[in-house]
Amino acid sequence: KQIKYQEVSKDKLYQLAKDHVHQGVVADVKDYEYVLLEEVLSDSKMQRFIILDGIEDPHNLGAIMRTAEATKLDAIIMSKKGQVPLNATVAKVSSGAIEHVPVALVSNINQAINILKKHHVWVVGTDGSTEKTFYDLPKDVSLAIVLGNEGEGMRHLVKQNCDILVKIPMYGKINSLNVSVAAALMMYQMVVPK
Image (cartoon, rainbow, N blue to C red; front, side, top):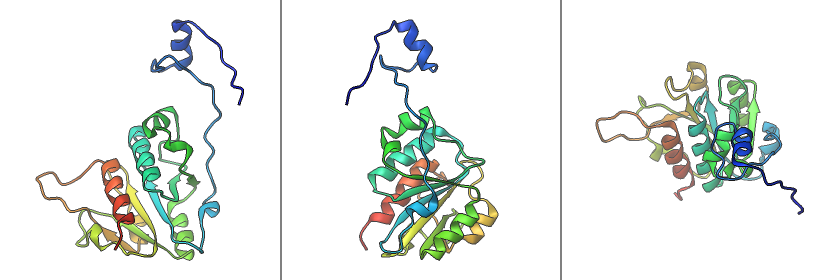
């Protein structure tokens, strides 16, 4: 393809980049396009999704997207409200994964969960206080893992709407993980053969 470019001064690069992290190149690109939930659903194959319930840190979302691409997740589902949008920081942290992982933006997480269930997707919530661990994830079924907000976790109604709750075993003195790390562990557990 013929890509038009223009050489400019360092001052102009800083002005265009706004956040001063340009590494000598700035590109003007179109906004990220979200997909409809119905577009990524298929009854004909086993599918894997991550549902994000209120992730606020763009670095966490970017890291989750990067792992989602590495594990060949079918899509990320997230709410229009109370959630960090796809932006330049998310794109940078995702290291290009933002271009390969479909993101379905929904008005209501609980309605999205109900739609997933109608398509025979098991919805698994993450909760540190439950007895079952991520080793108990159902195998050979379509799965959607719900990850909650960095500080509050999943909202109560979302938690109630899950088919099963699991935790990541913690063996040290710290009782929680960063949400992007928890997401990575859950995603890899989804793809581990039985």
